[in-house]
Image (cartoon, rainbow, N blue to C red; front, side, top):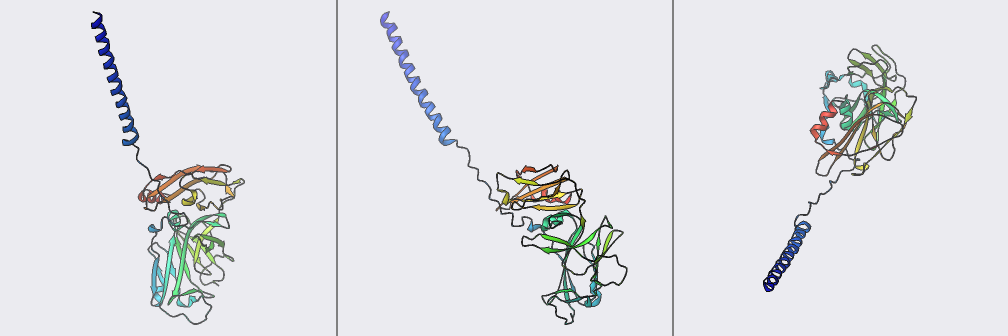
Length: 326
């Protein structure tokens, strides 16, 4: 009996040892599977283009082109509804030469009449940092055999710009294009209302039904604007980003109640902004693979506000739809 009990104990002990060894091997095998065979996939971070490049350049509309072969060709309407009226005698060479300009000449007209147009072209609405309420921007370039032309003294050249809000307080601002592609707008001097023939050294604008009638003293960048209403409280805003760096993200602040837009530059954070105004913040990042990432936020501007930008993958179609609704 004692021998049978001893035999059974030895048999049980051998079984425990075998199970222990098997269990140990299974655990080791399991650890190997976890550590070696089931590693999580490596996620590569997207590489974003620097914000100094226009990420929306592929969506730019071509400017309106017009070759003027005879005098009647200088009275025409663009596809966006701008009416142009002029004579060949309205032009002279930009070099200052008084040689008569002869036909044909070429006109190139870029019309930015919506916030979407301005964002796509990287053109904001500020004058030395002050917000402007915009009624539309237009650029007119005239050339003869590749040489730039300007308006001659006493030119009667005029344009009529379509609008849904012919605000009589609007003025004309001429734009100086900056190295980054943006424009700084300067109020034109000697602005008068005009009826018929007028000395064009006095830039003039009249708000009529569904249009602005403009007699500019020069061509180039022209903006229909007025200074945005002043606020008693002015503040600043700071945008940050953990990834990608804020330098790789292009951001616009659109003040929808003021109809004013400015771009955020990390090197010169916008200040003197009206506290309490409603803002549409639009941030865009484009990767080297042309993938679109956006961060869009609407808010009322608080004192010394700081916002962390967190881009999410989007599509160009979704972005264009949003911009069209501004």
